[in-house]
Length: 418
Image (cartoon, rainbow, N blue to C red; front, side, top):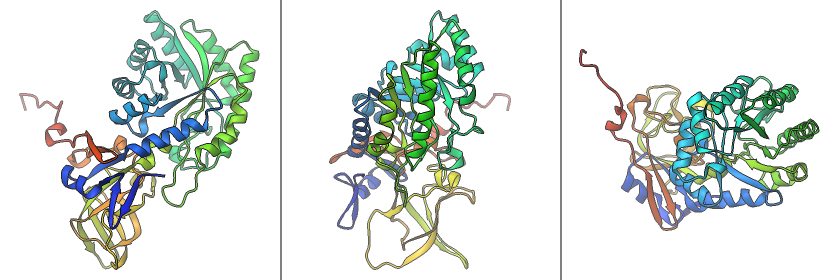
């Protein structure tokens, strides 16, 4: 459910007409619904109320400070994968005891920053990382709390690029050698083993991979305890999908019914890392039609948002519904490619999509763009990144100003002898 809806012929976000926002802030821009964000967070949180748990929002999905602050006020934490995400989470007011640090490529300075902040725990992904973390913690005279990320070799049945739980991926420790890694961690004097972490992928639309994965992880936890390793936290990752088109992913309560029987007797605090399922359908990308173009073989709608603003269609072939901001009855329907201004043939928001004919100057809404939208944006073709706007009831807030040309060259220096 989301709060983007038509009133008459005009598309609204909550109580605000989207066309009015476009006139004020220009296009393209990302638009988020406060009511949708809060509802999705609460639904996920309440689905797992039977077990002690913490929602650590996946910052990579949407890192805007206002959105992170909103989740912090609701009792949420953060799943971060870089020093920059850690900085953003702390700056947004998320308490460090609600932050977990994942990722296969943590470097020494990022470890220092996280240890200095005293985060809840690191999700370690390799033997070398464990040894370096132990060394850094020793140099700082402290102990790093750690969960080892275990790869259960479960197929999440999603796009290969966002599958992370198979043997061939770069993520985690294969479950067949997980005991060895935990035994190594036990020998490291500045490592405190506190948990197990697993994450099998993203945009998962079936509960069975979660059940298979957590069944294997539960067996591992029992085995670790028989060896005297006390596991207090089980971080089950994220990955629950959303409907972009005709998908029918499980509701969080359905996922809860399937996995709580596995989790409830483990004696662990359960950490969840939802991202897309909370923010995906809470945001859209608003873009303006620049031109329409007909060739002998194809019709195009050229808009002012491109792959630098929303790369998912180009990168994954992902589907995003596209709706007019103002509907007009009786218009001819055409099959078109909706493309942007970037100098790449891969710059498209939709291919072979049937839409009502549009004219230059009209607005389109690219739906389900709240996750992996702005966070994956770039300045390719020297394009300033888009603005971000949050609507709450009948009020709206500019939560990120559109970049200016001056922002594009900040930090660059031309040597005097050139």
